[in-house]
Length: 165
Image 1 (spheres, one colour):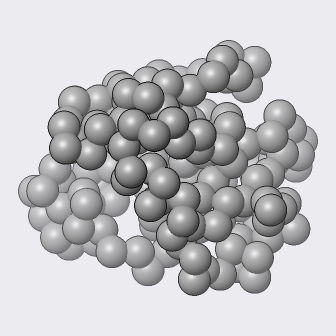
Image 2 (image 1 turned 180 degrees about the vertical axis):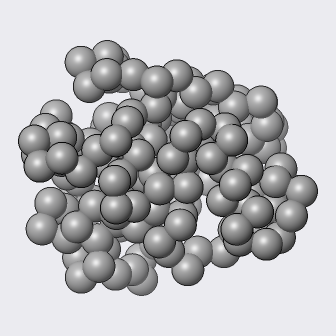
Image 3 (image 1 turned 90 degrees about the horizontal axis):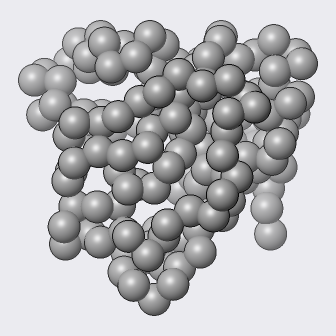
């Protein structure tokens, strides 16, 4: 099963792989308010309270973004990103996956997130509801079903990753 991940235009995905939050040097300010801390280790602890291993996870989609003219933030996101893909079956076969969670919703600005532990066969390939995205309402990826792969080593090595055109 092919899954997709967007990374910033300037990235190290093809040399270092897809890094989880705990492996990257990413700014964690998007989690600081919800974690009630700006300290990395405390943010990781908060993430792992939402579900075990979240700080070692990478988010992915079951299809590329399909901007439908509803919210220009999606088009801007795509224009400022690079799309990568990988085969979930290869990651599972090689023992890189600890667990898979589905995020099927949250309130505005990422609060009250809903996660469900799923098996690979439970991953839905139904079309995603891109028309629901609305930056003004704080509804971006919170309203788009996506999956978080908890990775044993906190990364997907570059040899598993394909740059999409």
